Image (tube, rainbow, N blue to C red; front, side, top):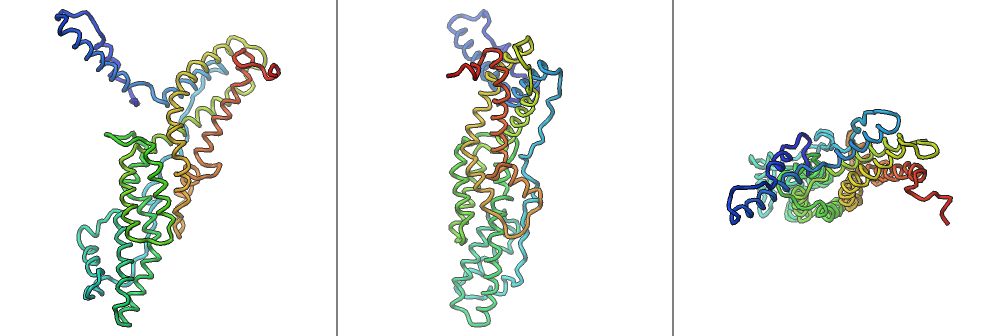
Length: 365
């Protein structure tokens, strides 16, 4: 956890450090311990984040290679496209529900009444999918008890509703406020479940999303799963962290190409110290934590990205996002990040060997 701007807690931590006191020993020691604990907590809250470690490391490498450089900002691909690029429009049904309000022993009248109520007009996406699944099931139950003309009209309505259910299911996952909260790039506010809790939830969402049928019970479960996702640590900041790491590590690898040639001059020694300090002690531990969290989510995220292709075309922004951020292919963020790690490690090997940090390949048995 860290802040993006100046950290006032560091000043508080210094002021709260133990100092001689005029209080008696019976009161002074507990007071000092409490103040020390508070100071440590405040300082920990402002410990450098991964982005700070990456920028500092990148800047140091630039300093000892070909001179100063601007690490620049990564072109992030992890921001979820706006809602208008994610919503799939559902065609309006030509048969209106109030035509069936007089049906006896059929839930369609009750459901039609709810749809036309103030709450029914503003249903969130997950609730709307659940509602449409209930309408479809109720309509099929009513068919056998109707006369031919009414049965035909209802059968037509059911067919329209069935065709639209995959669209409602897409919207339930990708446009709900709860899902947007899980994808937010902002750090979580308040207490959230650990990030690894999301993996089984995402896997189950994928299973439900690929079912050929839409029973109301599955729609209820999907609604609950999406709500649970909103109560876990959001995946957005972790994806952004991988994107930033990919950017900085790739740029560092480019700076190291052909440097220093042969031998281990002073700039090379300083570069090695940068690797041992800024990278091994700063970047790597912070990156490892994010890496472990996303590693457990990579597979369920990739599965979800291909589980819900709607039967209509999506805007390019959403199509690109699914492919470049979550997809299972080599163009996805996870694969590009892992490739950046590999290239970064390979770029350091010649320099570390020249400076005696790693054994030369020719010296290995």
